[in-house]
Length: 244
Image (cartoon, rainbow, N blue to C red):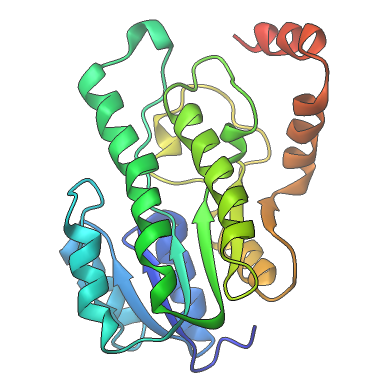
């Protein structure tokens, strides 16, 4: 995809990979709509991105995405919608805060389902819908719940959409490994092959510019996890048990 002049909506743009993507796309001449909960952060980012349009929304609020889509309908079609929005709170299942777990499910799963339901009509024929899953959704790892479970759901959702929306919409699943953001700053373990948000944005843009369903990175890490996923449970559970 040549990004110059393309109209792209980034949901979850206020920080991390979303903000890095916004800057990288603006540098390439894209016309952006930026959404997230933090309107102040979006306003500051918009000034760095050539006056991008700001449309603050909270995916945890049931009506928020529908209202945003209505606001953009007059300006449709879009060339791409990218949803990076997610909540993250690592921990063991026994230590779950039910309210926090419910919030993650509401944003990470139900919010993404709303993106999948409401955003495709805004896209032109041949447009792209990028849903951010995660390598954490490939298989259950100790200490990763409930985030890993929600990302497994997103990975599955994207697989379904890729078939349902073809050939009009090109669905892409983005599965990052560890990226240095305010979310991964919560981790209390060594994160292998960790990269910067700017490096992650570069991987995403390259993935948007070529054919293929999944964009996963960094491959030196993601390929190892993919291998672990296809092993028999008798072996893979023994390996992940050592991680715990």
